[in-house]
Figure 1 (tube, rainbow, N blue to C red):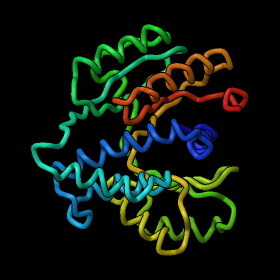
Figure 2: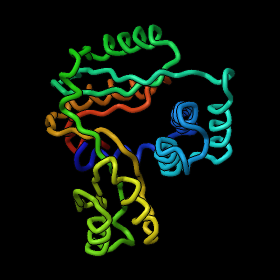
Figure 3: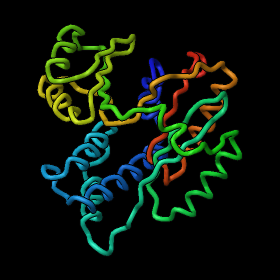
Amino acid sequence: MSGHNKWSKIKRLKGAADAKRGRVFSKLAREIMIATRENGGDPAMNATLRMVLLKCKSVNMPSDSVDRAIKKGTGGDGADIFEELNYEVYGPGGVAILVEIATDNRNRTAGTIRHILSKNNGNMASAGSVARLFQRRGQIIIPRQGNDEDKLMELALEAGAEDFKAEPEGFEILTDPAAFETVYMSVESAGVTAEGAEVTFLPTTTVALDVHAAKDVNRLVEALEDYEDVKEVHTNAEFPEESQD
């Protein structure tokens, strides 16, 4: 998402009620279990796990919850087995929505997603029609307060970042997925604290919405995010400021 959308997402998460934060932690625990089951529980030897742990750090997930998920993921036959897949959706106003899923029951998840869409003016899209509108990028979000724009930009670009964007709320560093870890570690080593850091899907083009359509899209996105099998929801919506209050 562009501009204020990503900042609003960070603010909502930081100010979320305990129940909502608990759902976020539960979803991250699934990601940890998937990563550790495939490649082991040592972050030094598991790049996927390292990426998930960065996400856990950015939302202050308790370390004991992280440790339990790692142990469960490496627990062998007793561990839950999750399948990862993406759903491609069109929402109100023609917005493209890419939904990342982690499920232990594909049929249950498919039925629930279709139910959410039918109640919130969403429709399943044909394979590839939505995915082609997004690209995988490393994204690091830095608050403006306490950080010098010129120094941070120089640091990021020298470390291998592809782009650096200055916005009223702060700074966005974009990288190729393969360079994400290197850039993030360079930023962290310089004493800069990120508000968000992950490899994610970002839209290549956006759709501007009026206030009415924005409310409908937000309702659909929130319904999807509340479902436990949904890892992340990405849209190409450009929300008007008043819809983000």
